[in-house]
Image 1 (cartoon, helix red, strand yellow):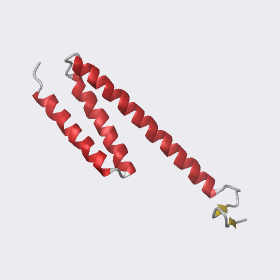
Image 2 (image 1 turned 90 degrees about the horizontal axis):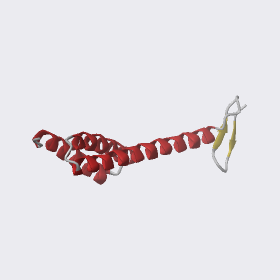
Image 3 (image 1 turned 120 degrees about the vertical axis):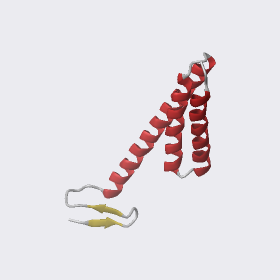
Image 4 (image 1 turned 45 degrees about the vertical axis):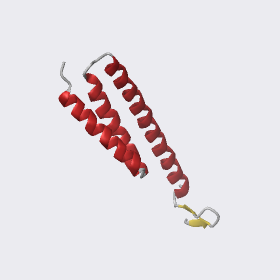
Length: 102
């Protein structure tokens, strides 16, 4: 049994699954994952600032992780200017890790 609801271009399969509803559910889940990763990246970046204030070298590792996450998020969203900024910050964090002397 297949039918099309012209208003939403919905397609029902033999099992009665609404394809559009499944796609909407997947999009909501994807946004939730991206939001969770963004929140995680923010928490890690703030922890990096706290570590830097205490002159702990681990701050660079935290920034590398947070900038990598945000670069991936921005690339996924197609926000290339922010993705470029994140890659620059990631590169600077790697340089800082290399140059920082205890």
